[in-house]
Length: 302
Length: 312
Image (cartoon, rainbow over all chains, first blue to last red; front, side, top):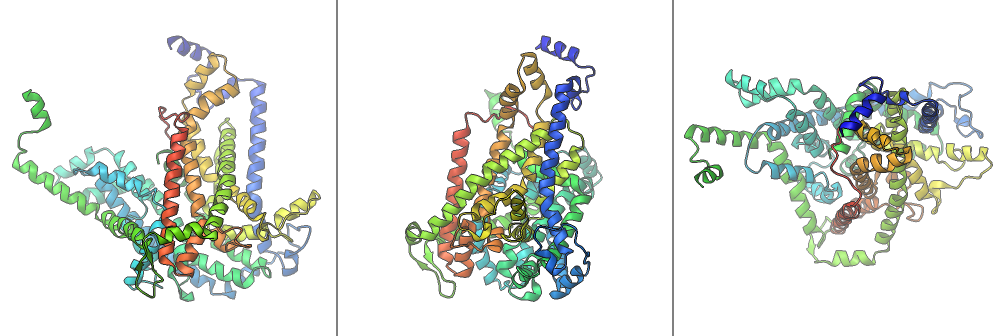
């Protein structure tokens, strides 16, 4: 052990070589690096082609859409496809519906999940560990099992054809994953601050609201983003619960488009699709690090 | 002896402290109440209700009628149940291993010290952001037999492409190809796992004269095995839950060739309003997932290495 440690440090030019350790290897290693980069680029290119195809189609004239071989850059770029797609059905109306639902979902998820996470991270109670195990095991329960009874519950409450079935579950802790993620983050905050606040006469709610929440913005942002995506992309719940066309959210509106336009106006359909993914894309590009954190947490600690 | 007793049972908690403790208990239940209520109304209650419903005939318009295990007996004779299980398994067998292999390979490549990893990571993760209906629509167009991207590309190399979503043979491969678009999420997880492997393990192996291949099989794979296993299990569960793409792109067709289990369950519950039968289907799905998860863990016990501390 001792020997290997010294041998190691001899072969390394500097101790901080975690990232650059390949550098000490010569040409062979560099060739490997170039090959790796090329392969990564090929993969990245392959993944982006369908998106480019969507954008290209959305800007084409009707006839050009069905041209073989493909003409990637339209002869005349038709920006007018977008207004046409928006006015074909009241797309902006559905957009606002989706935004309305998503805002209420995000609020509910962040507030309720953080309250519960605070309880699990900061308060002592007999049987807390068992409750935490139950919390985690609900992650394994497929939603399909509860699908029918939850539908019947909302039906009994008279909530069909309203947004309540899409929003209310998020006000009850949302996904166990949100609670888990926040609890993990709260556990890393030092309790000294709590104690100091307690001496100053702060209540537990003060500690939650004035100390823990302001310190947990990255984790709260992660939950906000994930719940926004869950809501924005959800198709099955609106399909089950919404009947009135006027209430439709974006995925349902896209389905309306599809049944009206597929096989005829792929350009309009792709324009509408492109518009529908703008909010997720904007959020993704502006807050990437939260995504990576969240994705990693699901996979590594789950 | 007395010391042990003292440890086991602290002599009567002082009154004030007891009061504080009780206040803390109450606070816990208050703070946790959203989840506790949610657990009751949206998870535990419905789970029990679903089990009870699975033993009834319940077409919604009339009250549920108790029929014992008849639903489960009927399921075993239902050709569509077997078809949906076949479709889901075939898809799972193709999509899960291929997805994991590609995701793992890309993560390995990115972990070589390539420059601009952050940019590539963004690109690979991007498709995961636009899940659901938009992805289904884009891929319907990409896979269009006459004017789609894939068949246009195949035509360039002189191959007449299949009918993809319109062919009973090619519809599952089409869904598998489409699933590979979503390797971003497992890739990011793998990459974080790879970055968490202590460098000294590789260096120790190098000192022992290990080749890259040996290092891969004896350091990388064992250290990554819990992450791989987790993604494997989640992939299989995800296959059983596939709904939106199947509903939008083919609605189970052609001739039930893409009747995914999740879609079949939805059809029973909300198209044909066979709530009892749908609940029974849900429980069969739950049992299959449970058995498979346990099986995967049992079978892989030998090679999964849980000793390492893998951190982000």
